[in-house]
Image 1 (tube, rainbow, N blue to C red):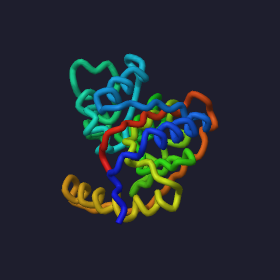
Image 2 (cartoon, rainbow, N blue to C red):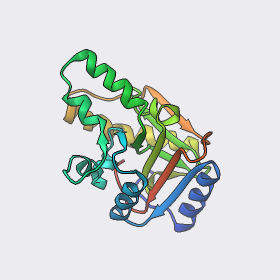
Image 3 (cartoon, helix red, strand yellow):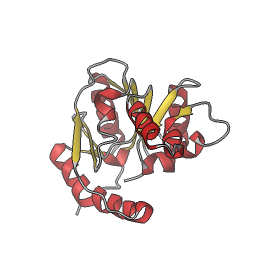
Image 4 (spheres, helix red, strand yellow):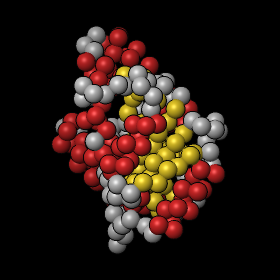
Length: 204
């Protein structure tokens, strides 16, 4: 039985970060959630237009709370979408939120070969990560680092999915499903994608 919550050794984390950076995904390693939140905020300029994936990691990090706090200087499209009652305008905002200036997300697994793996039911996250957003920042806990793609798929199917399915039923009254998968092996545009690896368990 795999312990999917285990934080790997500093050597594994450092090597993974080095490979990710060599794949045009600049990677920063921090020790705590507080450091990760500070780093994340420092990477986004004031008044930037941004959207986020639905992410337990970002909630636990405190970033979602920050976005809704009066001290936040970011233009968060997620709240604009939810607040819009006109169906036509809401659809327009959703399209705009996909091709956003900054997109902040987590992923379900990171391989030691420098691959990001994510899966969605609807595709809202996996549609934005590879191309649509101008800038992408991925915040991921180090326990999501796995040996290879086969292990990443195993982690998602036996560990992530049951927890996400439970969360969806609790919050939205409907289950989840593994419909749309994404593997990012290399960033084509230098400077577009940045990653923060946190040496604390966060999300699932």
